[in-house]
Length: 145
Image 1 (tube, helix red, strand yellow):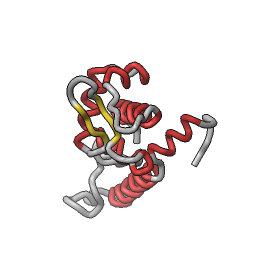
Image 2 (cartoon, helix red, strand yellow; image 1 turned 60 degrees about the vertical axis):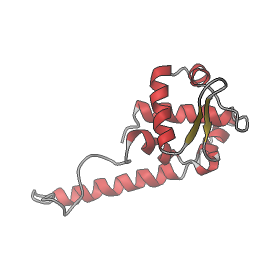
Image 3 (cartoon, helix red, strand yellow; image 1 turned 90 degrees about the vertical axis):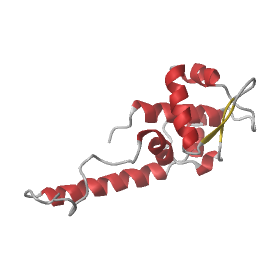
């Protein structure tokens, strides 16, 4: 699995919101873009996807912007990546034993493996929260979980 640019940008934007959380005071897209060096038009699309997933809330008008919809400890990295990239999987190979997937030699064994690897990726990304990333950003660079 390769985390897409969207997944990386979403993670960076949310980490910025978490690092600069000021109660329920919204942060403008422009401020997030400046702090993270992300392109503002692309960031706006990503924040809309995160809003649709219930990870951020927005306020329109003067003083508007985005705030986290939940505490950083309740937002997993898997939720962030899934919100902008769709389901986390090791590949687009389908499921074993469905729709003729096992019609070729050894294919079911490999499909089962890719399915297991995808599950491990989901579990691992689910083990990290946005709060964990705030701690890492605030502390030693090489802290590991």
